[in-house]
Image 1 (cartoon, one colour):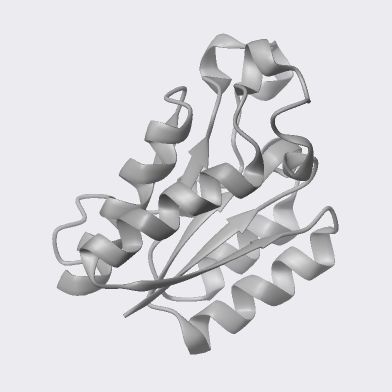
Image 2 (cartoon, helix red, strand yellow; image 1 turned 90 degrees about the horizontal axis):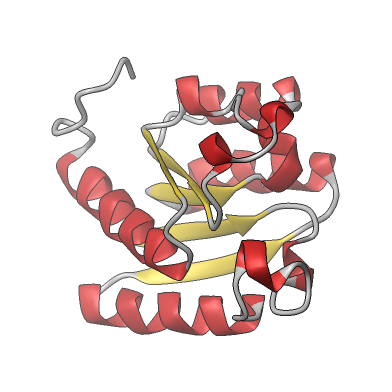
Length: 153
């Protein structure tokens, strides 16, 4: 089983970008923790990051071919990208939306996710623990074919 870990814009700056909001771990350190967990779960992962909306869309489309689920932090595109929302809705595999910070406790413009209604679930505010929980959820949904998912998808 293969899971795509997809990081959106500005996440390449983790560890030095607003550490009080996003934590002190770098993206590489987060990916290492995810790889350790994936090995323990008996799955493979590919971690990708892009600051470009079109590239994120292409990676989601390819995930429908190569992966059984996606853990996706769309970054600021969470609040504005209908194109990413449509890609998540179209690919037919579980997508877990994840955020390091609690988007619901931040500025008003960050509280709305256009991705959440078409994702299998959303985890926010738990830092790296949220990424690890999202990977566990993605694996569980992929293993059950999504039959344990209580959402609308």
